[in-house]
Image (cartoon, rainbow, N blue to C red; front, side, top):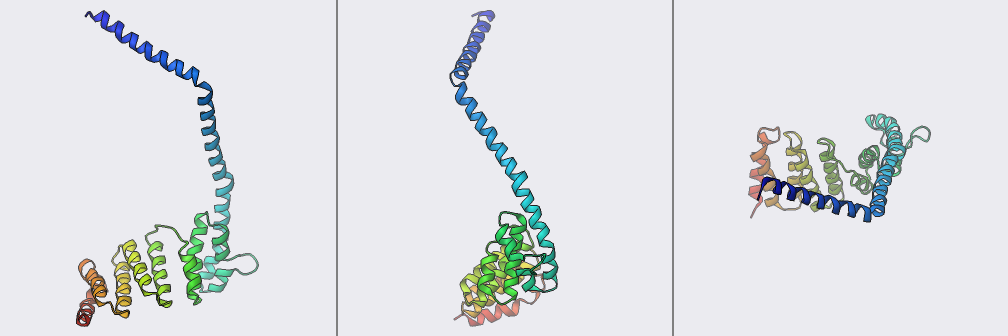
Length: 228
């Protein structure tokens, strides 16, 4: 077959494909236009919601947080939580009214910690559990606070699970050994010395140079002596 023949055949194939494509577009032009229009409207709607609804709410929630953080820093937990009746509504209201914002999410953590410090563990749990974040400092400490609430409520299995989550989220020389030790202490309190030993051993194996790790051998021996 000659080179010219091959080129003509290839050209014919290309033309057939283009012709088929043109026929498809002509036949489906209206549905395609409708689909494109729907996509444009959806994208425009999302952008409008972000610009005209979510961003202003985020800014308003962030502005409301400032005075609460001042009260919180002064250990004025009731004022931080419930507001001052004038120019600050309180972390609880911010968390409830602006739950879809980052500031509202942070306010839930603050509200939970305030409730905890006011001795109201059930209320603290309800807000601490609303917090959703992966901040390397805040996220593990919120989990640790959840564990503390469960300890106070004598729900020890849930407390151990919370401290385990906190230890894994923290993953550092200072906080992780502390959370493992808390989990071990609760396990010992409920008589599960094998579980306690497991947690103590984690500290020795992975964080032996931490402040808690340097003194962990005596806890390991204590747990071993209790295992029958």
